Image 1 (cartoon, one colour):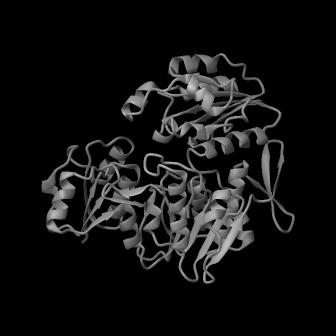
Image 2 (spheres, rainbow, N blue to C red; image 1 turned 60 degrees about the vertical axis):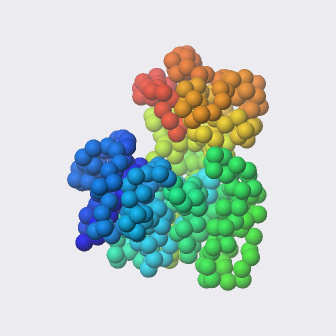
Image 3 (cartoon, rainbow, N blue to C red; image 1 turned 135 degrees about the horizontal axis):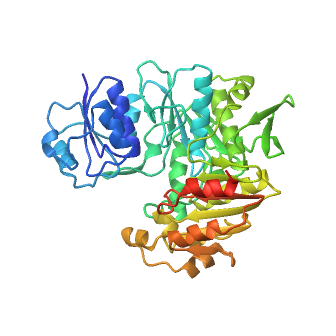
Length: 455
């Protein structure tokens, strides 16, 4: 039996890997200095929750088959040091996923935006048609218990290819380590400024990914994205380069229909140009995996979207409330434009929380210029204490307004004042969009949604 120890087991993807390994029959142990929900409950139910939080070098012994170190451990972690001293096999998350899938066809979905949704679309279609597959994805998907699955008999694995660093001691982007056979680049928009200090350095990571496409491999890319065009230029005669754009469609009465090559209409449950591009990317991948067009459309009609990606919170007669994980400029623009185009007769109130290191960094803020022009009422919220925690300089609301290049932008730094402003709005024929990777510091979304929709 394999005996595997995970350092920083409480992370969102790491605890899913621990559970996947446990399901496969490995003896799994782990450590972390903080374990939050839902990881705590899920690890506890499987019997692999550490007895105490903290780092315990005595857990590292010569009998371990492997040690997997998560990104949130520090380079001087005492368990990592012990594993190094014993000469054990030490893997980052992407290294281990590659090791476990060396004999499989590897499909890696990369890009600054859309990769979770594209991955979710592909998994939905494959499962709909009872295909065997493994996967590793960074977000919880509807209908999937775990975000990682590793089996012995699945011939393919679908991997969401995050460009962030692999581990505290391996500063290579994760998606460089999977060694894809089929690669996707959904778009490139500078992010993770704390790791990639310039736009050029960031783009170079995708250039490396594109060049890694092997002989007889396939690189699928957004043909309309300028940055992607720079890295996906055909450079090898032995690689198939496939460009895609938004799927042909029509919008009627707040509903989007795909138009097939046979001029048939397929109703779908997601919307927005970014999702129509995601669908095209997923369709090209599925085609490479042997899924015919009619079978793709049959499956896609029941796809409800990835969790936290333009997710419907509540709907009323004349108003809807959506929430979205969006925080990067390109995602912000795409999501806001999608709602305006889907419901052109309604006002849109959109609220963004600046929560990530990049979004709160004064050097990065100018990237948001004109990204929030689509909403009728645009609101930005940030908590000054988060800046302190991330060791960033103080940020003035006026500086945020200037960066967004929208004079009527409302900027709040107090969650109660934000709530009061939103509750004071007139919501007849008006939609609400909330975008954050945080929580707006405890905003009661249920009560607000009920008020907006009159439920």
